[in-house]
Image 1: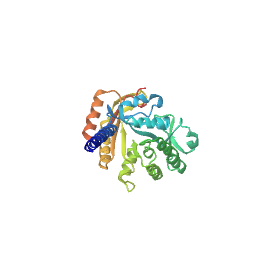
Image 2: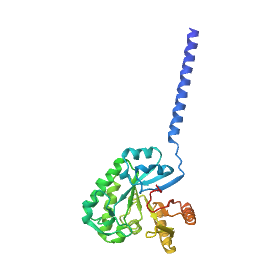
Image 3: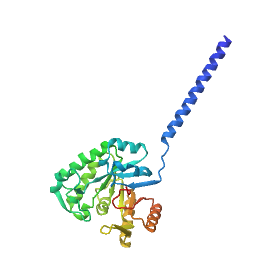
Image 4: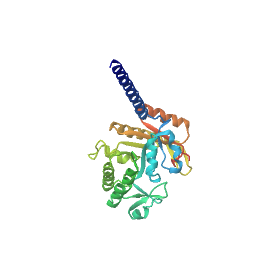
Length: 287
């Protein structure tokens, strides 16, 4: 009997040891899965690439792509690799290369300077609002993007009418129903009005991306130079106002001028902003 009891105790000890070892291994595996993946760069805008050039994205944590050129599986793969994925969504203008161009060309407003294949669109039109929200936005959500990178709210700068402003608000509120982050690219006139109006509430938009704070694009020569000091001063004040409203601030600058790059980096580090410096306004990562 005594020998039986001793063997039983030893067996119990063995089982306990196995359980403890198994728990430790499971915990280590869980911790490994939760480890933050480190990327050389925090942010990059690559709306000029398609799924054939996705290797360009590997060194960037937060990425902005045009998800219409990527499959759901490809988006999920990017997220598994640790990327935060935002998709470009043009709500204020109409591009000729889009397969829905003919459907909405009758409600365009006028030419888009420097972009020959693009026209401003009347965002007050219900059929456009519904299409952006229920077709374009929905398709991006289905693919699993983390948020929208909304472009061309500058239509309100070009056509500063109440109905245009209200149209943009309706689109943003519609997109917000998907519970996704919204970054407004450019659109300083619209955003300035928004954050100081009764329409503002925390969460309608989550961030802004401002281009050309320190650099400016010469579209004719396809070159880049320092931005006018007065313009830079204006943008700094605008970014500060957005930051005070607890909006995350992103900057996108252009060119290979090392002095301007350093100026951008120093300013953003001081202010807690996130930046990306592209060598080309085509935003294709020099594919």
